[in-house]
Image (tube, rainbow, N blue to C red; front, side, top):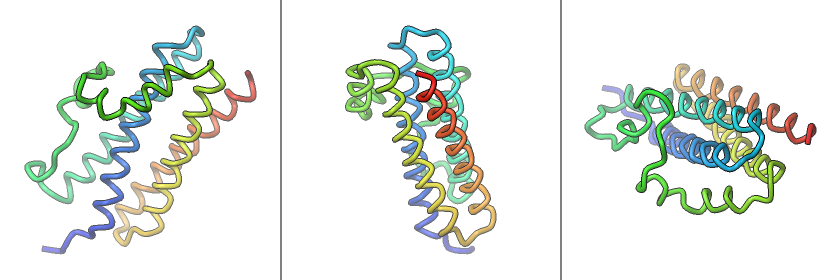
Length: 160
């Protein structure tokens, strides 16, 4: 058995956390905006972040068995976009408060842009550090997705 690279597991764990953080933020932002098109974009981004989480969780699961991994699968693997339960809300209380206190769409987009840039940087670094070609490919894929989110958010900011 080949030993698991701890850096890969660390990156996957951090990536999972970052995707859930963005997911929670987008769901909250969708609840508080007035514009339907903005709300739909936030829900679309939430769905994509959920997909990223699921990809990372599967990648993690392929490295170690699910019995050794405490995941958010019971929450995020349900069909549709689940509501934020009390446990998840407690973990992300600060981010939810930040979204609720935002002074409008531009401030929400500024927060969203920072989340996406952090995720892009994480996945780019993880791709550069990955020794396994499959891991590298996964992280590069996620970095490209985050870059698409960055461009979308930047475009939305320009249109305000």
